[in-house]
Image (cartoon, rainbow, N blue to C red):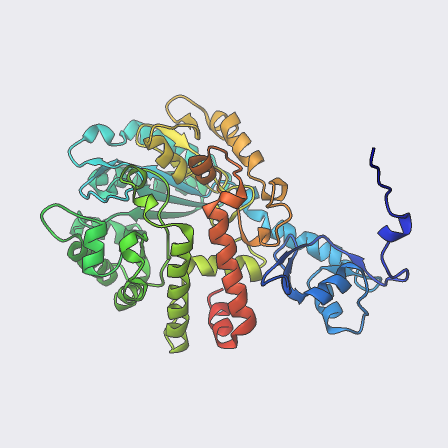
Length: 488
């Protein structure tokens, strides 16, 4: 029988018996053929070390007078007798990063109707035709949901109206806004409203109401006319023209800072990234979010999600980011919003506040969805999954359950517990962890497992590749670095 002996105890000690520093928690991941490594800690401090420097750092072979020693010390990777305050600073930064969780749910999404006047083949919410009023939220349901909104301890409350096409139930939107403002006289929260709309039902009444109540508008714009109309068909007329006219009316009536747009990447979009960006710039929008398809709703039923993979989308993203950086270098401030979110996680002590880039997941903690029928979901994606017939992430119903029953439900608590990236296989040792997050609904939808096998995760592939690309720009292109840092 074969047997082996452990090495002697001395082999497990540091090679320097008189080390002057101690290591603080860190993770490291190879970047390019194992020549350089990203080293990060729990608060997002990071640097790139070559293989030799990494070896010296981990084996406590650095000397206090070296530049690498001083950088590691300043970023809380090591501490010595003269810098024990680093532990306190590290804990303070960690608490600041996690402060979003103490505030609890700030974003409350009301799905006021599933009715829609478009027939987008990639629709993620399985919209209903515009004559099916059975899919409208009732006023009684809305008022019960509103009671839950103000039970959240968050000092900031944002109510977002979604559909379908939300303006097809504009009367209910008005009622909710009036009642929320009335309740807030006593609550004194920082209260904001957003209407997500395709802008087709936009009229003077809607514009005046938005002006009077300081309401923001969010819309969808996929690019130039041919692309937008192909992606978002509307029977009988060009949806692009209606969207264009709507954006310009909102900008003129409410102000250019009161409207934002969101694009979705289809197979048709992949060859057109520069034209898409040019369209956003021409309309003087505040930036662009290069967003891939999500595996929900009609995007699955019509097999749109199968028409490109993460690698093809990443090529699209990288080409777009290079073009956007060049635009900024020519003097036009125009960020790519997802990149800006990751940069904020890399360089800011403040939380990014984006549900998909949180650990544990922001589902339920940072955002919650009240569906038209009163069902409550931990995230918008959970609601989309439910429209496909799978209500695994339903956490309650406003007509039947109390605030405590909904937000302390086993479904939500299990999702939160399982989505702590620091304890997830492969995530726990990954240096990209502080810049990433978890998406339990995505992994359940694609792998039937809320943790998911990261080697087969499109979410993981996307975020790791984007972060690597950003780091490469920061390290090797000083002009690109100047642009990227201006977005934070």
